[in-house]
Length: 108
Image 1 (cartoon, rainbow, N blue to C red):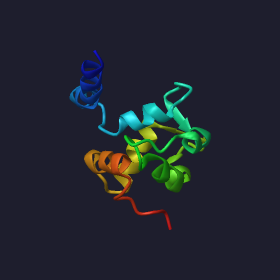
Image 2: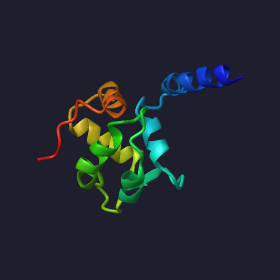
Image 3: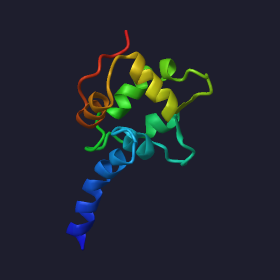
Image 4: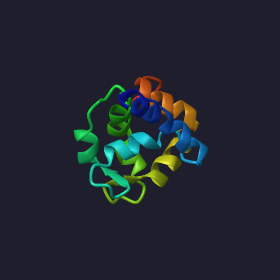
């Protein structure tokens, strides 16, 4: 049973991508501890640099203020999508960066 569960968990990102969700969206979901669909700076700060999303926290800390385009102290998936496009990155680059913890330039 444990192996089947691990296999299913490994397939979730693939299934989500197949349904049109960005491959990095799992990082947002993992960080969104109150389940409101957005992440606050506190949620980013509290986010554990897990093996799965090692680069999510440093990226969000570096870019939070730039991504928060409506200035509500929260980042929505839409704001993150827009910010990623402005940085000239594609979804796969961001997903690799969130997972591997490299590939991002810190905000200067």
